[in-house]
Amino acid sequence: MARDAEGQSPAWTDPTCPVARTADLVGDRWSLLIIRDAMDGARSFTDFQQRTGIARNILTERLRKLVAHGLLTQVDAPSGRRRPYALTEAGKDLFPVIVTLRQWGERHAFEAGEAHSVLVDDNGTRVPDLLPMATSGSPLTSDTTSVRRPESGATLT
Amino acid sequence: MARDAEGQSPAWTDPTCPVARTADLVGDRWSLLIIRDAMDGARSFTDFQQRTGIARNILTERLRKLVAHGLLTQVDAPSGRRRPYALTEAGKDLFPVIVTLRQWGERHAFEAGEAHSVLVDDNGTRVPDLLPMATSGSPLTSDTTSVRRPESGATLT
DNA sequence: CCCATTTGGTTTCGTTTTGCAACTGATTGG
DNA sequence: CCAATCAGTTGCAAAACGAAACCAAATGGG
Image 1: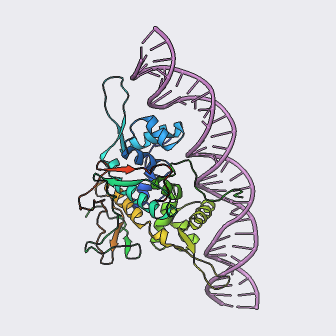
Image 2 (image 1 turned 135 degrees about the vertical axis):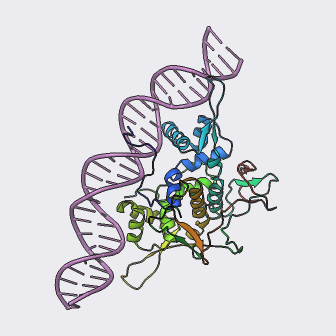
Image 3 (image 1 turned 90 degrees about the vertical axis):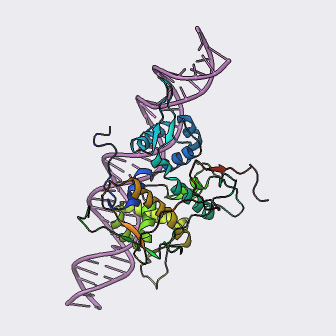
């Protein structure tokens, strides 16, 4: 199985689009939930399995993929001890992604009055909504921004 | 086809977690890229097909799902005219998610000097990185926040 | 108005991915 | 030492996906 290169750029998506690159890594049904649970304290195989409900063979595969791509590591422990998973810096850096997914869900995926979990800071205060801003401080939307594609062939200046 | 309830809560993920709810809607290989392209001006079936490279039958299915869940609509046009797709308010509200995915990709999914597209505002200025902040203005990470789960049974106060 | 082309799908079929359950061999805890 | 737990594997069935062929309704040039 997996006869050719394991985890390289799939190439079936625009190779210059950072959204596509990220989606290639975490854009499946489980990876983001695994990251979410890691951020919420999950460390062991069974932690992840129980919290997500993912099938165990798929969990194995996903954990390996996330480790291979440097979002998770297994921390060192004395000989023959089990090695818990932990987020790398790159993994932790997905925090803004998880937060925006959460905030969208809170706004659009629950009925009014339906109970859901809330992300709070050290003081127990709800984390404020994340909103793209121009340098000037004015809010940005998809209508007031655009994607500038790289000139082909340009790599360094 | 589609013999039973079309698009309801899958229930195989924590029903009180907004991240899970959102992932249930857009947590597959294509939906986020479709949303991305819609934000970048894609309107027609072939727009989406050409930009993403998705198989046409799957595209049909995804567009229907996104419409069913209220992220896309087909705008009205005079009798028997083709109805282009457009983002709803809920769909546009995924903008912060797309932006954080993009920014993570820019930071971690490209080699130094490798060309990629950039999101800019009306002035052509790059959109600043999105970072969760406490109300006080101090930056937040997964280490300085926690998820408060709802007390079971509580629906309204 | 006519016909060729394009658009927006649908159908069929083969491949891949996912899920489930049973199983295994280390690890741990009492 | 022994039972339970952990971290996976393995085998198989079900679901999702992809490629290509097909089709009817729009479009558009002459």
